[in-house]
Image (cartoon, rainbow, N blue to C red; front, side):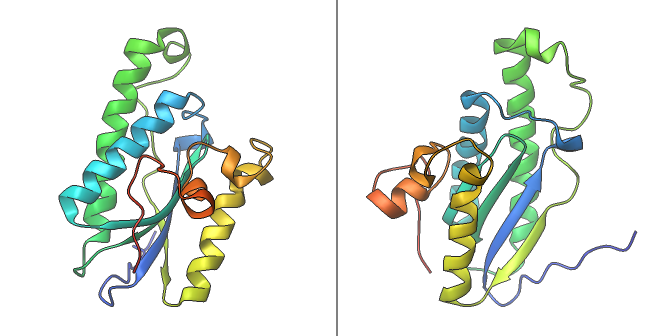
Length: 169
């Protein structure tokens, strides 16, 4: 399979998506979703990046990210996925052993690849934020975007903190 090209030289924001391996619902528990966000925050600090929005679903994650230097996205995503994978496996083994016992924890947490879309306009940014914030509503997990705790929708609609600092371009 040919390697996908990541366009990360123009300093655009990136709408990224990555999914649990084999579409397993490994993020059912709130603590699991919180781990993904904790690692996001620490990796943003480490890489000097900004998060413009996010949503953590039961089997996948969306985020809009921006970095002040080119060629950061792949390294950032590698770190976010690797560190969250280790932390999720530790959590499942220690705090959810009955659930972990039904899983093959030697298998990867995340699919190998992630998908990104360069955001080059304010209109496209609003479109991607709306799509991502409505994801829990479309999936039947929340009545409104602000009802879902693991999303930046409350920051945009109500100005409430969401666990990850939300920046702008």
